Length: 156
Image 1 (tube, rainbow, N blue to C red):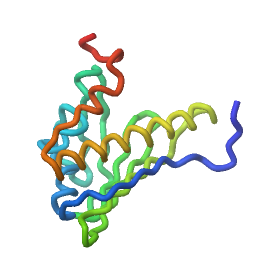
Image 2: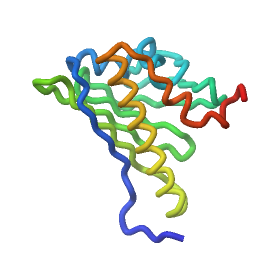
Image 3: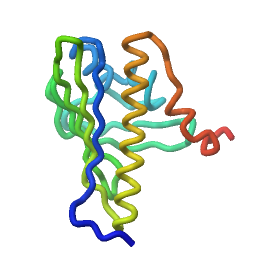
Image 4: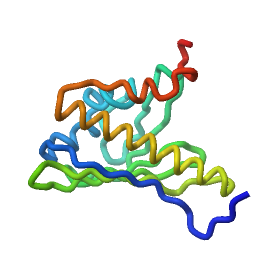
């Protein structure tokens, strides 16, 4: 069993060589997000709303509480109830494009569980950023999320 002195926080970052408005919109608008992350959404990310995201290939979904949306700057959600964790996206304009940082915190459970959740989150959000980069910069739809765990697919 692991004894933690500080709760782990998962964080990943990437430069997307597109304007901040376009990168922000890719996360806010499910018509775009479904091309690189989840397969179905009940709506656009808007502050105060609860949205449903589904990964139909795995037969799983999550209710997402949208806590804050600052246009082209920041999105904050909570998901994974009843032990919800917080996810924050920040969008920093750069000369070359947009620097996106995704931070996932407030994991719960035993020390072992918290560490595994943080590791899984960092890997997952890194794949999401890679898939977004391929889509926006090169028009390529990567299937990294769908192909991450082929033995877990609902259609297997």
